[in-house]
Image (cartoon, rainbow, N blue to C red):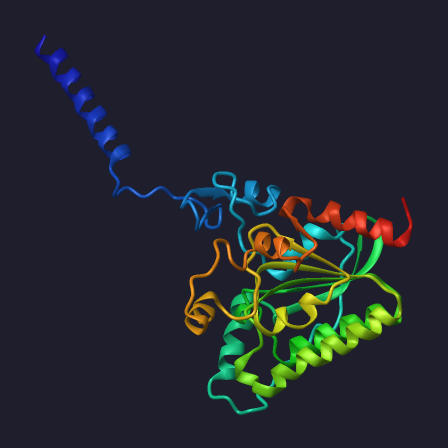
Length: 290
């Protein structure tokens, strides 16, 4: 009998030890890297595959994850149809701004992109289009001389080959490290769009979070059709600057996509998962293919 109780005691102790290990918060569970992504809005972990299938929208709180330029294009264009243009245009330092080239190099390494704008030609629901997207992961999608040049070249390519043009904006504005060279891009991109318009071609501008500063004050606001992603921040100066300047409280929802729709600054606010079918319908109508 003593032997029986000794054996039983050992089994109980082993069970307790196993239970303690399973519930010990100091015991780390090995989860493969990048398997889950944390939502910054609700702090829930989201399975990466579910996030991709859900258009980078959190399944818990429905907030939008920030998209890179290539992720954005992949969601919109027909699979395998994108052909990139002007891939290797490189940023210089025209004003000799201290640390600028080092910052560019750091962003190139972290984002694996040469600059903050990715452009090319692709098919969208079998319609050939010229399309580009700003990348807010690269210096907040700011517009320097190379970004302005790439946007201009995309517009000119669209005009030359008579293609509908689609640009997704996500930017903090003009790039201060390039001063007047950055501000000149506002006029250059706008002039190219005038020639595109004179050729009776369609330009769809899609404003995503955030679209501000010199980008908002130039090519982003010159679309024949201006769409905005739900909840996007759209404006020129920031709310804090405006509030300090006018010394007044700002309206509720000021500078959101919905506020801009109400004031007539955008034509339509669209949920992310609806952007592709909505743009396809506009292309169908413009190209008279129903």
